[in-house]
Figure 1 (cartoon, helix red, strand yellow):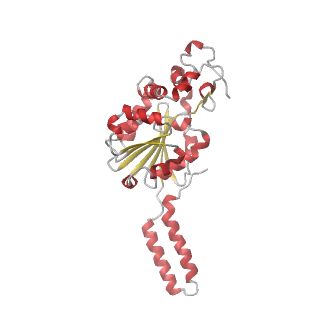
Figure 2 (cartoon, rainbow, N blue to C red):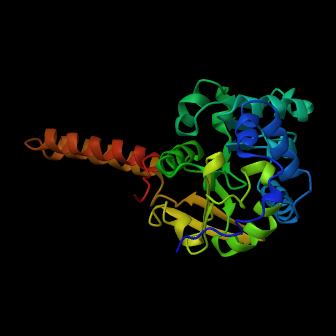
Figure 3 (cartoon, rainbow, N blue to C red):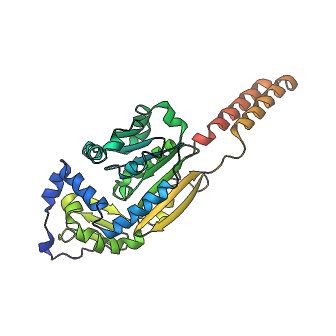
Length: 313
């Protein structure tokens, strides 16, 4: 059931919807975002970020690259750039990236750090044209954090996940961190109610707060957020092809996705199939052409298996 709540508190409207919308086009809103999310002003957000820093840092070593899709001010990149092989932040808003450069000058001046402006649904072509060849030889942790996935338009989510899986490859990791549906009511009262400058006031009459489905819609600022359950997040991935683990911390839920091992070693299978083709050539003259064609197709398929994992639509 969807119902508006907390409607008659006009004194909380410190920042009007018009001011919020206008601020996104300049530096004001990204700066407010940074101060709100990472300045320690909101306990529920600070709790997630502190956990996130420690947890993801434990995954990173000198042969690991960290990529954040929808990086905002690149806070995780600023934590990891001296530890990871490469750190990469992708965001559609250049103002955020400019602010990230200003806030984190050491990271910005690091030759193995890249801040890339672009659409998350076009991640692979963007990074292919931007990053050095050495980047592609590293293990890659591809992330979307701090509820970016929750505010992403629903019609883009599958396309973005597909790009993230391709970028991670067969040996990498995809990490999605967003807000947990079981903590939605807590988030309304402890986060949104105290930060109207960020998303707009939840006390406006038009606001819709759907506790049952964990959805928040603030029409005045066009802000929409969905808080996910573990089951919802997991449904974006084919469990037959991916190992899917989850972790809940505070109001956050994290999904960790890795490709399941392919049965057998691709090189070993390739050698065996080449031998099979040669054997057919010598022993089955009348049928060897068809068998060899079929075998070469098998070989081609084996070579592609690690790269052709698909999402469970």
